Length: 195
Image 1: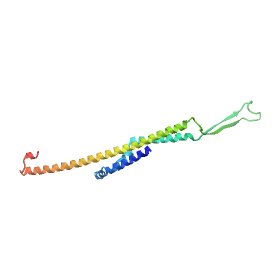
Image 2 (image 1 turned 180 degrees about the horizontal axis):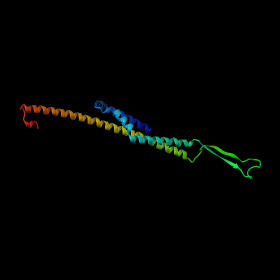
Image 3 (image 1 turned 120 degrees about the vertical axis):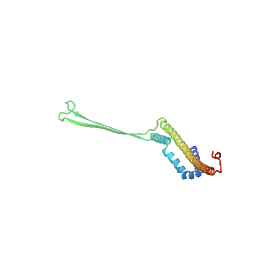
Image 4 (image 1 turned 120 degrees about the horizontal axis):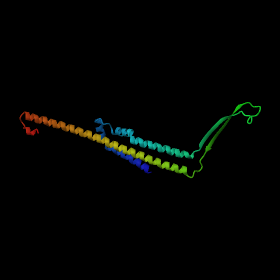
């Protein structure tokens, strides 16, 4: 139940973030930043921290499957073989020639655990808890990565917008300076107005 609530909170927060920054996405696209979705997708695809957590998740899933396999029967096959050569008078009959006897032993055992003092059940429970923990860790790392990607993307958009405003400001100041120089050159203004 808590896991469902966590997923619901993640989906709602992601939608809220996308809605809140939808106007900035258009600005970012116009400024060659790329969309917020692209930023989040690349952060999720190339994050080594997230990849590490995903591998831990896969390992815990495999360990859980292995623990559940403890309930299943196991098959053991063993084989052995050899040859003997009887060449002395005590071990062979008088009318036999020197020959080899091949011997072999093959066995197949099927073992079904009936009761192991609860060790199989306890191992399964432990692996289930570790798997649940790895699942929550993966979700948490994914949410953190999304939030970090959104924050980084918005910082880039903000800085690009500030750069655009600064460039507009410089252009306006250049325009004012040109006008002031024209006034000075035509002796309408003093040099003090230019500084």
